[in-house]
Image 1 (cartoon, rainbow, N blue to C red):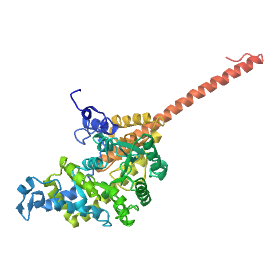
Image 2: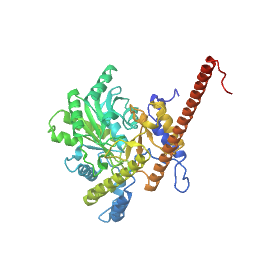
Image 3: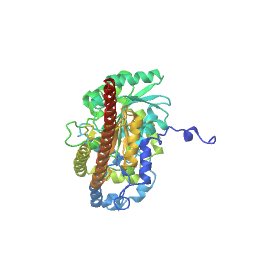
Length: 473
C-alpha cells in the first residue's frame, strides 16, 4: 500500500454504504421474469424507463439524426474529429431551450453560462472544485442522495454538514435547522462555502416551496455563501401536482436579484439522465451566473466530455419542440400513474408513504415494522427485505435520515408486471410479520395466563391451609 496514493487507499468513497451494497447483491441474483423469477427486484435504482417508446419513435422518424447526417449528407467525419470542451453550440442552445420549457418558459438560460459535463456526477464535482478548497464545507438537508458522499466529497475533500430535517413537517427545511447546521460547522472550525439542495428532492420526491426557496436565498445572502440547486428531476413533476416546480432561477428573477451579489453565488445542476431517461448517454451540465466559475469549470470539463455524436443526436431531438412538448406532458402523466400504483399497493400492505409530487421514487415509512427505534433495527429490516423478500430498496440511514425506518423505493425502472410482483412480495412479508407478532403475543399471553393460574392456585392452597382444610387433589 505504501506505493499507492492516499486517494487510492482512503475509504471515503462511500462504496461500502448499504445503498451500493444493495446494488451488488442485486447483481449477484437479478430478477428476470423467465430465467430467474425468484431473484432480487431492483428498486434501489432511480431510472426512468417509462417513456423509451417515445424516444425510440422519434429516432425511427428522424433517421438522419441517428445516422449522423445533416440534410441527407453524412457529417460523420465532422463529428469524429476533435471538438473543444465548450461543446457544440447547437446542442447548448437546444439544452437551455429544453430547460426553459420544463420550467414553463418562466425563465430563460444563457448558453454561454452553461458548462457541459459527462453526467450530473461530473457536474457536481466540477462545481465543488470551482467553489471550495479541501477542508471547507457545504450544508445539505437530510435525507439526501447517498451518492453525494462520493460526488461532492471524495476527490474534492470538502466536508458535508447535514441540515437535520424532520418527518414532523415532511422534512421541510426550516430557518432553525439551517442556523443549527451552520453553528455546528463553525464549532468544528469549518468554513461554510454554501448550501446544496435537490429540487425536486432525492430521496423524498417533493418539490421545494416558494417559502423554502426564499428562505434559502435569504440565508446564503446573509451568510455570504453559495447556493447550489440540483434540479435534475425538474421534468418529473407530475402534471396534476398543485405544487408546480419552481426553479431557484425563477426566484432570483421574481425578486429582481440579477444585479445583486447573491446572483453570482447561485448555481444550478442539470442532466438528461432522469427527465429523458438517458443515464447511459452521460449528459450533465452546470449553470452559473459567475463567468469566473464558468471559465474554471469549462477548463475542468475537459476531463469528462460528452461525445460529439451524443451532442448532435440530442441537439436534433431537443430542437424539435413539438416532440419535447408532447414528451414532457406524456412522461409526467406516466410517472403519476406509476406513482399512484405503488402508493396504492403499499397502503394496501399497511405501509405509509410521504406525500410527494415528483421523481422516480417515493419515501416509504416502515417504522412500524422495526423491532426497535434504532438504525440497527433498520438494517435488520433492510436485510430481511433484501435477502428474504428479494427487493433491493434504499435504507434511510444511507441517505443520512435522522429517523430510523424510512426507505426510498424506486418505481420507474421496471415493467408494470414486475412492480405488481414487488408489491405482492412486500404485502406477503408484512402479512407474515403481523402473523408472527400475533403468535408471539398469544404465546406471551398464554405464558402470562399460566403464571396467573399457578399464582392463584398457590394463593388458594395457602388460604385453605390457613383455614385448617386440606385442599382437594
